[in-house]
Amino acid sequence: MSRNRRSLLLVAGYVLLIFIVSSIPSLTAPGPDFVSKDKIAHLIEYSVLGALLFKGIGWSASRSRTATFGFIIAVGASIGGLDEIYQSYVPGRVMSIYDWSADTLGAALGSGVFIFTALGNRAGEPRRAAEKGEGAGRSPGRSPKKVQ
Image (cartoon, rainbow, N blue to C red; front, side):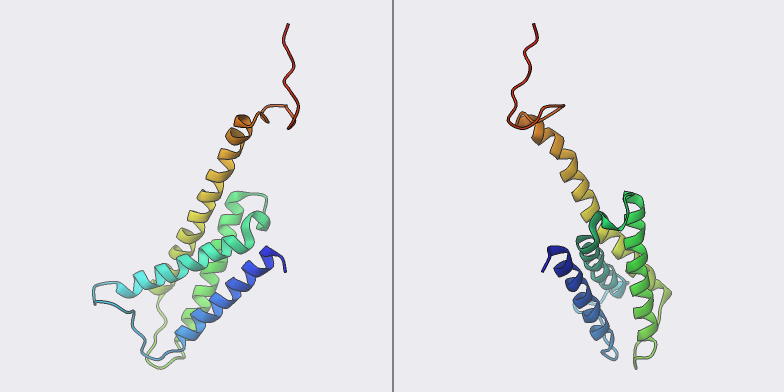
């Protein structure tokens, strides 16, 4: 099984987990009580989803990095919206635009971290290639031309 397919199966499993947790009536976020604790829980939950989406989709969604980032955010926001609608049918749970906003922001943050990490890795490739003697018009294993 390809690595991309495994990553997408991981995304599907995580989305299933989100909906299973959303099925628990009157659920509250664990830990000490403080203002907006549930929004932080949504932000973390969907940051993981955003990272998994980028890992599964990567740059294959579009040649444009901006379009890829937008696509991943749109998918994360859609899953968050469906989750909020689903929660409105679970006893003790409510649908909230604020929760959905935290979901969307989380998906953006999670995928953004992966995207900027990937950009950083790509930015370092020419430098590593130059260090190995493979830069600017030279093929690996070929010696540079002598200038006379």
